[in-house]
Image (cartoon, rainbow, N blue to C red):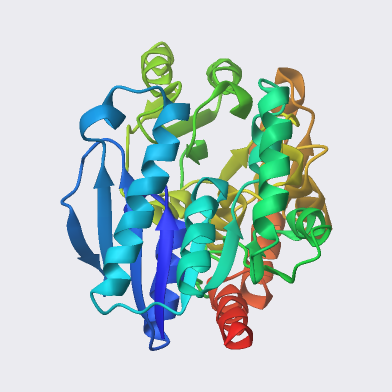
Length: 369
């Protein structure tokens, strides 16, 4: 079966899309992904793991327009590329749209070609912007509800998201962002100093710069940071230089994340409960699980609910004192760290791994055929 995916960023920076596309190719399908390479970082045409990639670059007018005005142009360009693919023999049976900002293109292609339409909602975009742009958020929700009427199946990331999208009266399947189970046995860390690690988004809603200020004032603890060059990346790089117990790695390859996570004693994902954060299970959670490491998460989130249920970490209030207490508790109690780590790996082996989620994805395609 031929499948067209649509994604509004370069494929290689979105592990979820890459893993889903590869799973479909490994199952015998042909997958082409039309992506939006906004920084013109890659060639127009490429192939990764037998996945064909067609990149739309920011050339001409789209290059100088503000983001909201760029999106309709991206839609038109992606739609045109999809039609050209079909006319040139790639008769895709399914259009698989990743997130709200590709759904309009999938809607147009279904109307024109009669293909099936899957909506893969990694985020609830209306909630993401609700606090800063309430009017725009309301518009997005109305538009999403209207477009979903023509969707054949919705895929999303966890149970709170499933409950949200089930209200739209469409079949919904959860495909979590679980990781490959590459470690079969628990292995304790081997660090002279208790080591925390965080590889991911560094922004004001993720407890930055607070975490640097907290760890910088604790003896017997080291913090390793890495992430993408966006948001507060540069500020955190400079602030880290003020503390001897903080190591800033810059940007690291995706393939190194699990190895680095396993080399540490614990990790964390701290997010305020605004927008949709309270609904999320974060990638850090699944990375910690497959590595057998405890995690510190924010209370009032679905991530905390899962952490408490699986007994694989500590949930804290979103403030400096609570986070500091949790770090010290883990630092001073290696036996507790081991218990949490072993529970995390056990959960990954039994349920929270990509082999399980891949089957859920392939089941959607089997049903849609």
